[in-house]
Image (cartoon, rainbow, N blue to C red):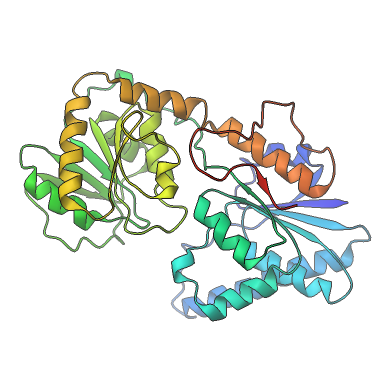
Length: 359
C-alpha cells in the first residue's frame, strides 16, 4: 500500500514518514491569507477544487492501493477519494485534527458529509460528543476517541516566575466572556486578565478590575497564564473540541482550573480534586467557584499538583501520539506504527467512551 502523509507542518510530523513508510504531501495553512481581488469564499472554493483534484489524480495515478493520513485538507481528501471510487479505486482516508462544530452543521451539510464518508474512513476524535456525531454520519467509520493532549510548553517555568494573585482567562473559540465579566463585576476584590483575539466580541461592559489584552504573542499569553493564581476556561456551548489547549496548559503549570462543565473539558478533571467545575452560563455559581479557587490557590495546592501530574502522565502528548499511531496502523491493516503494549494504553482517567469504536 502506498501511504501519503498530508500535513501543513512538515517538520513536526516528520517522524510519521518513517513510522508509516509514507510520502509527504505538504499543503500550507492559508486560512489567514486575504485578497482584495477575489471574494474569500471564491478563493476557498478554488483552493478546494485544486486540492481535491490533487487527491483524485494521486489515487488514479498509483498502481498500488493508496491511503492518506490527513492532518489538513480533510474535505479535499474526502472529495477526491470519493470521486476516485467512481472509477473503481478504493483509497483509505484517515482524519486527525479534524474539527466539526455539530451545532453549525445543517441538514444539507449533514447529507453531504454522509456522502463523503461513504468510503473507508478512519478518525481520531477528542471529545465524547464527536464520537456520537460522527457515528451518526457514518456508522461504519473506524473511530478512536482519546482526549487531545498538549506537548510540553517550552521556555516557560512557572516555578521560576513571580506569582501574582490575578485570575487569568484566555482563548477565542467558543468562549463565554460575558459570564466571566459579570462574575468579575461581583468580585471587585480580585483582578482579572482576559487574553483574547481582536475577533472576540466582549458584549458586557468591562469592569475596572479586568484588564483585556488582545492578540498576545504565544510566549506572553502563556507567561501571563503561568503567573496567575487561577485559570478560568468558560465555554459558550457544548461544541466538541474547544478550550482543551488552555486547560491543558494551565494543568501543566499546576494552576487551579475553573472550567465549564462540558465534556470537552470535564474529561480532563475530577471535579473537586484536580479542578473545579461550574454550570455553564451560571454567574452566581462561577462567582462561588472562583472564590473557592482563589483560596485554594493561595499556596501551592494539592489540586494544582494533581492537575500537573495528570497533564504529565495521563494526558501527555507522547501517550496521545502513541495511541493515535497505533490506531492508524490498525486502520492501514499492518503492523506499521504499532507500539509495545502500554505505550499506547487505551485507558484514561476521565470520560465515558474509551477504546477503539468500530472496525
